[in-house]
Image (cartoon, rainbow, N blue to C red; front, side, top):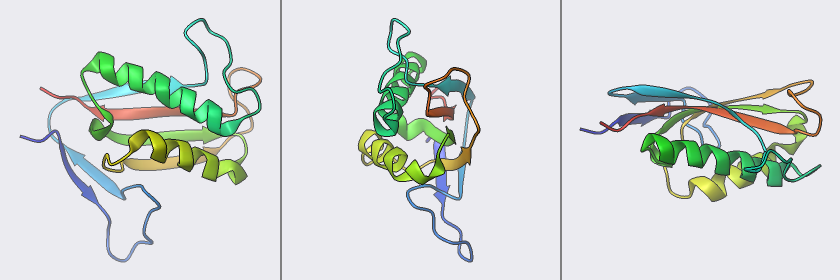
Length: 132
């Protein structure tokens, strides 16, 4: 039985740019804490570079998925926090490179005044449908 049941694009709602309007699941969910551009030793990766920071945050998220026994196809929702929404294309490009052909999850992007540490430009958290 599939864990991620359906990815919906709803008629009457403007189409999403590589995100689903809704995703349904079966089984358990995991809620992954926000990931930022920190290396294994806690150093900032990609100082001043939104795409590099997004790639690193997604790499960290990918490591969490692996620990959960999940893949990118099991991600049902992203929440993005971005200091400068005009840099959304950098986030999209990094996301698309990582997701490849995986189904697009539901997604929200919020412009924020700041993140928990100076230098961070983007943060992403996720909801994941866990395999049995």
